[in-house]
Length: 144
Image (cartoon, rainbow, N blue to C red):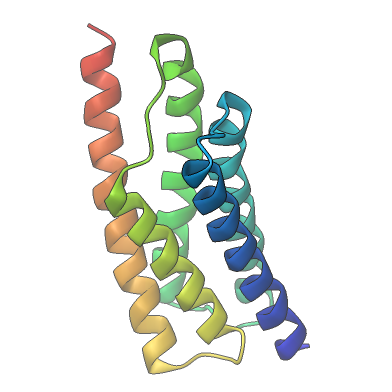
């Protein structure tokens, strides 16, 4: 089952990257694609974090990192929806790094808890909170 989970995550990450790359390269970026891509990333993050907690890979203090990621992803989804009428909140380069760190941590943790996987999860959580604060500041500024 670990290999299936890893395969699914690698497939999701590869198709996410390829879709964005081709859309930008061909200048075929659409409003619906720009809206759905972050939602898909957030749904994957939620599903993986809940699954890792359910099987005991994430427990104790490490649940705080998962909770920080889950709360930020929920908040930013709401902010994006709120800001869509004002031109939206475009994804930042650091947010892409955050998503990559999350996916790599998730893949590493599919094999069970490891120091590297848990450490990267905390790095991803820190990036998640930092980029969340950036989005919140940008959203707040767009409201005035």
